[in-house]
Length: 375
Ligand SMILES: Cc1cc2nc3c(=O)[nH]c(=O)nc-3n(C[C@H](O)[C@H](O)[C@H](O)COP(=O)(O)OP(=O)(O)OC[C@H]3O[C@@H](n4cnc5c(N)ncnc54)[C@H](O)[C@@H]3O)c2cc1C
Image (cartoon, rainbow, N blue to C red; front, side):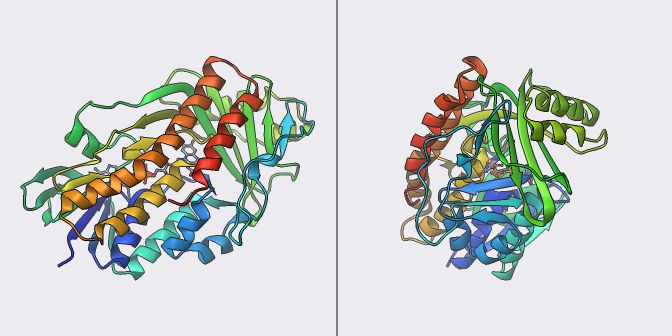
């Protein structure tokens, strides 16, 4: 009989695993402590991201509600700080029928993934957090934050970069490294149109501007500072400061359109990678809980979808639970390493060395060539 599985966290990893496991016939429950799904920012899915959307069975819905393109790299429109277009060597790009990039508003992606998981029989509960897990050997007892209890054959911790599940399993054997760079993301509807792409100073201080579906624009940048909580008014101030470092006319126009009340999502760029195994007994980890990275190669979310898909495939195969979970992590580790280590290198080049963007591009090119291979 197929296992009864609890997934902790309804982020990209948890929902992708829910789809893959429910499709394979497992009895799946997902609990999410937050009462809503996903930040109001955009996510860029490249390399095998579109394949993952296809394999999860949500590609058509995602394409209907996203900005996407075929046969070209999203990283080919590059401008200097003054707004002059710079010729750049083209990055490896797929040449088949799938899009080479998909930019989608995260709440839309979360809705599509949730609906798909539910349509396959997975139960998804919002506002239900896990307080404590006890591995009894033959099963796992779960105590929820609301005091309710349940028992599962397997628990999958998809509870993000600060994963409590990881801490319970592996203590402080890994900790995240803060890169020194704080990311700032701003999504706004109806902004003036202009040339989208990557604007960068010679020291790799970059502003990324991408169109989204339905006349929204996505602007992402960052600022070197200490890792601390930032109020919403300070977030707006930091965004203005970051945009103000570039003279490109379009960036100046966008700067004029930043309103005091605009929501700016501020997150530290951190990285970590847990060595295998990614499980202990009947509790396993996936997604940012095991591999966290920056957005430099737009891959953390893609790795999380791939984890979910591969977990479903490996758990459906023969073998005892330990063997199946070990095979899952062994299959995932090499790709996760490439992604995390490429981001680490790019963050060091940017924050520590203030390197030219062409130096960062070399790392991205190598990573893309590797990550374009099948998962
Ligand atoms: C600034 C920034 C930009 C990025 N841009 C991109 C990009 O363009 N492309 C890309 O592919 N990747 C990108 N990433 C990476 C991507 O966002 C992450 O890799 C991905 O969201 C991780 O998904 P996850 O499901 O593992 O974790 P999360 O999205 O963090 O989800 C974990 C969930 O678990 C829940 N949870 C935690 N504890 C409990 C508990 N005890 N009980 C119940 N629920 C719990 C949380 O509330 C949360 O919803 C970016 C990351 C950052 C920081």
